[in-house]
Image 1 (tube, rainbow, N blue to C red):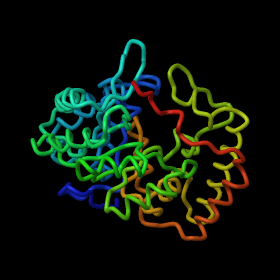
Image 2 (image 1 turned 90 degrees about the vertical axis):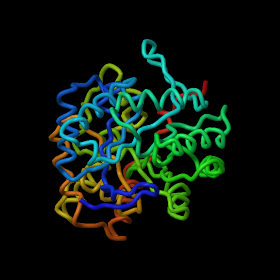
Image 3 (image 1 turned 60 degrees about the vertical axis):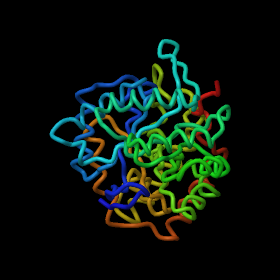
Length: 329
């Protein structure tokens, strides 16, 4: 495992964090609490010491499971805990919308502390920008929470550079959490360089592009219920087959040049592009096993160029993750 620093956090953090969206069950076909807890413990056994969650993941379910897992055997003391704020929801209708008002934040932080069974949240991130509340106002609310000792570091997720600049007028930003993977790379143009220039840590999500880069997807793979991939344009034909062709080529690249699999290449790619921490999602203990193969090697400039060629030759109509954005109020 490799480790790095996040502003405002004393402990060194692992360069891979456990992402717990799937553990919440919502948009991932349900969850198994006992299995999820074993998954969290398996990640810690691999050297992961940062866990990222959010209230909206299962409408509180993910935070509850994370809290129970970390309450066992003093594990909370070993972990840097990150969660989010500023989304509101109607669980019966399955609807989610943005709300970064001071009242909403004040309510959410107390709910999250209770569900997570902790006295302090190490990294507290605004989940999506809310244009109906001035960014500086939201930032000042979080700054007050930090002064009160309820949170340690402030972050944002899914924010543009301009939005981060406005937000930074109200508090010091320590973390930015955008989507980033081999297939979704828009942050390379502006967000990633900006964070590096500002000394902000990047905690990126979607490393395996909702399973596309796991090497396990097939053209006849099916998704049911509320599975997010039912609405992801990448999983609709003919685009889906294009991505699968690119995956096959990336798998060959990983094996021939590094004796690795695509799942290892996908995460190594992110880290070697300069991201601080890459989120690794999972909800079964065995999904943590490949983590050991991510470290101890690196990609060369020639490898990066080969990845670019594979995408250019196979994916004629690439799309980003914009379909995931929840609406404004």
